[in-house]
Image 1 (tube, rainbow, N blue to C red):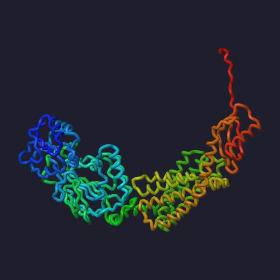
Image 2: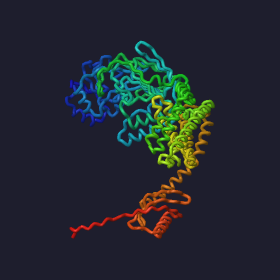
Image 3: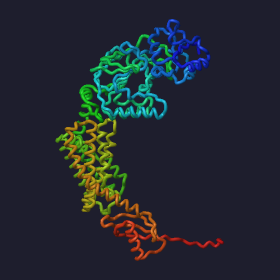
Image 4: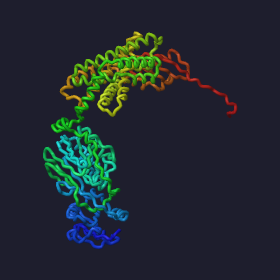
Length: 635
């Protein structure tokens, strides 16, 4: 390392000063107290090591001449902001090692905010600071600090109106936006938020870097805060509500006075102008890449920022928990939903084919064939249309969707009954029996399917077929089983499958409507009536399912209490509940001897005592046979 001068804070403890001076090798040309330092004594060829605080360092940099000596900062107990700005390592030894490896110090760009130097970052907006990463001493202290800052995200947030004017080459552009806050730096590497969000960012590239935070809901803000505070990933994907801009000049104008944080110093201004100073500072940095980067302006997600009517809505009230759909999104979705509510030839053909395939699969007890029918079924369209119609109280959409669903169900029943009459099979398969005893678990499937369908329809990037499969899973097989029960004249199968069909339809419509409401596709005042009707139907259908689910729980308890139990007459296996009132069981008893009528009566008595209620039994006897061998070689 070249010869250097050491400029130090004379207010440091004498023991610390003496200890450091003794370890210096090579020794500095001169040790100078900060109060005695003057730039006039040094040329641009000299190397100056500053062991000073943030306040002292800022004054030095502001006073530095246009062609100053080369500057290196050493870690100091009160050097925090500048340490982040220039990547100063935590120990003096590390700084000296870096200097040994790379003594080349390039002049750095200096950000000017209203003609005032900014060495670290400019923060606009009083709520943006909660997303920063502040390093505390110790894991538990750091976690505690981050946890309480995370809780601050749940407080009410209102976006502010900003006008952002910037240059793209020689062209001037302007944005009228709503935002939670803005963050500006001269070097991406100097700020933790930029380092985590912006990939391939250069150092000293002659551009101002700006991040604009414009969340449309508290949920998106909380998700981002959770990721940024507890699970940070460098170079991760930029969220949709975060925009990035790099340019040579920026002017930011607030509709009201803006809260500013310039290197941690707070103030208020109506407008700020950002530019790069003609003076460049030859400061040594601890960043990995200090090579001058290619000057290339970038614009990311600027088109996603709230403008126009959405900007006005977001600045009038506090952020909702879930985002509101934009007018453009609603128009596109509503147009597609209106088309799907119509009864078309394609819909009828696919409905007939999917029901035929499902019916054949049910008779053949083939799960894969039934799944194929689920994929082919076109029921997603009119069901989602019905949900949106109920949410927005659109009578035309509700009527069209109900007619389309009605004809689809009628056509499905017709073909299911037809196949049932043609097919000589009269015994219910396991695939059929699985769909005649609906319970709350089936209702949960329906609700999840409705959420999946509505969410997929509201997001272009999600494949619609995935939600179509999820919804068809809950509708086509029970429709086919209903037709089979009707064809056989078996009303237990018919009503059981019909209840499952109605359960799934009600659950899907209510869940899809609620999802659209949360996503902001209808105001609550308009949606209230439709939601109440959907909820009433949902609860009406859920009542018998609760009873059915309680029966299933009772049956499971009985099976668990008996299955595998060893009684004096043998081991109980294959326990099945045939009826609950009166209780009727079917089971196998595995014994090592032949049992007689008196034994069976004793077994019934033992089971009744165990369950504390009368029991009718269908017993099957399994005799364990022990084969005896005569081994002549045995002693």
